[in-house]
Length: 619
Ligand code: AMP
Image: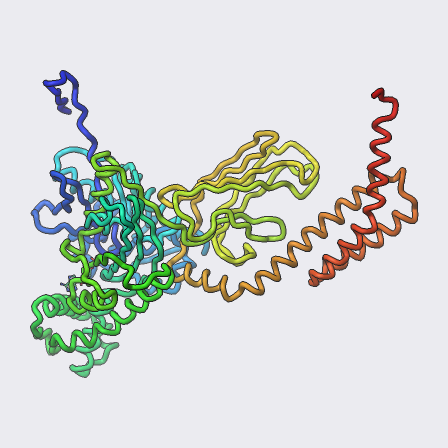
């Protein structure tokens, strides 16, 4: 039975404040943290040992599902039914992951290439959202048994570059686990919060968050000012991390033992055993600074600290190159960075830490456990939301422009790239055809001038516009990007008050590389895009004039001479030919000619209309 506490002094029933938990839903490991006596703590397993929950799910049967450490053990014995790295699949279509499919040991399937991926286990199909939901449920259970009461509210972290679809998928996973996700927070923002950076300072602080985990690397440059976090830039590599160091060690052992790499690959158990030993060697050598030596069967597995550094260096160099780019994108000099926070297990390696520190010319914040720092920061954010700390806003930026398709397939940007989030913007449009009752609103993300080169996020139809001549309806399109980076699009016809609204859940997500590709593409094609846009705009205008000229003739048959009608038709025909061609200057010239010719006739027509309407009226 639930206990009710009574505040004896006030004589009131005291409401037990809801616990809001912070969750780091990671690619390799996940954690849950909460504020205890004012300090964030990561929750350990029931044996009081580990805070990390491996993000791994094992299906013994449809009902017998293991999550975490127990599931990790099945990676070798039952790889087909053991699912890992689900985070890489969140909000992705089969097309998005095709090139890396071999990386996964389980079956990823698609119904058609554009739909979201599913994972097949025996005869059942699971979406990455359901699977992430299972991990979140395990974390929820862990904390509930630790604090002895149910929890239902959470803050979950995601990489700064996650797009709408991936954020929405994370939110949905929370829902499936019975959690009300109050906020989706960027991982680097959480890491900074864990160190309390900038919270009580008026002076703006610039922060670099360097996150080198097992399989991914991220660098984010943040700014915090007046309690507002802003992501200035992000960069990284979704396939770079501690696993690459392990692989380099294995390659080194293959070399010194003169082994056939293919023969090793074929013996699954042996190769797995060597992989685990390589990871152990890496951890031991990097924490003790002493050489490692072991033997597996006939294989000599040894490595010196000097050799390990040689193997690690190229990986560090790659990360520093990404840091360089992130600094360039943030338009900052290294000396302007006030704080460097390191995140991820691989930053325990002294050479990594020292290299980052040398790169920025400043000591790194490394007091907190690099595996826990994101979850701890999520707990701090949860505490802020619970009203236990002074209010701190979190502000991010949208990495790609958001807009809609207009006539001729043009992209009309409504929220430009790098806009701060949350953000709201709107614009008025009208119809292009007389009596148009429906208007299709197609939402795109990207930097190119033509929507065909951008990513479609979704579409809807504004129905029931009362029939009006083209150009008369006033259609307002509003984009509302909330604090989680999820987009709501609203269309309303102002005269009739017809309204329609959707929340955009894009069909598939973009990886960081794809995002970079799209930006690069837009720069490379800027010139050709601009001329394509100019041609399309000229065509649109030309078509509108052709349409109104026909209407003009129809409505003014009384006052037009045969000659005039013939001349207008000839000119319209010439304009039509130009519109069908690809010379925008010719289209503009033909439009000018037609306008010049029709202007005096239009005046005459107007006088006639006025005269008619005044006939018989008393003034
Ligand atoms: P994460 O994805 O943040 O959990 O990071 C896991 C990665 O950190 C794995 O590649 C681990 O092998 C690596 N790691 C953990 N501890 C150490 C250590 N002491 N030295 C080197 N690498 C480590």
